[in-house]
Image (tube, rainbow, N blue to C red):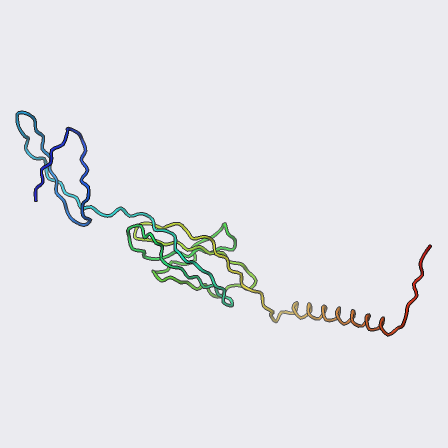
Length: 187
């Protein structure tokens, strides 16, 4: 198909409203009152969508399950004009030092296992498309609970607390059974 367009003299031309993936051919001629030149060498182009970074994953949640953290999320509303191909999971021991923990395919969950008791972990999730990584989610915080263990220190602490309680109760018991007390006041 040939479309002829005439334009005021200039050095650029923008062809708009093209279909992505369709090849278009162009040549240029010049004309004046005497006539028209021969066409230039034909060039072609295939428009492709302008891909941008994807949006932030949505509906993010963190659940602590024993010594594991379960992260879940849904796809960002904006894929940046390119399908989401995966996610990057970031983790750190504080909120300003997160590093890549894992790259996952386009599943919308991740479980971090065998975490240390009594520690707090910080997470972010980043969506990626064919060209770019998007912005990270807000920081999610998971604290793994401390649980009693079999270490001697734990039993010593329990023993000391128990002895202290027994001593207090014994003193109260003795005071209750000794009868009235007299108190001397200094004048």
